[in-house]
Image (cartoon, rainbow, N blue to C red):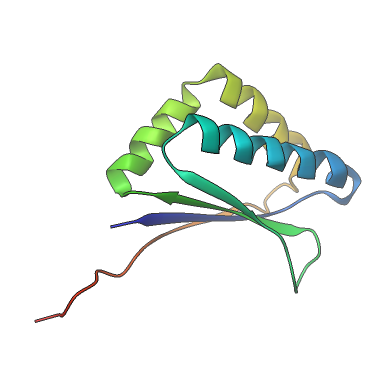
Length: 107
């Protein structure tokens, strides 16, 4: 059963260019080096500087394994640290975890 991690945040207006470039690097790095898919979602309506990351995993155990691998990876830490500390408005990060509905007939 797939697990989806939906993280919303606000990019600081004075760090907008740097934030977008860092998001692109994060997406590319995670998609190339880990066993999950990451998408960057951009606003169509609502607050202009609100963005989201949507990560898709095979299941909860896979999410835990990939997260452990990421946070043990020095190269990933070098990408993620400045992004959250310098480009994201403090207190704006919100993380939600969803899973897909089981297919088939219910009894």
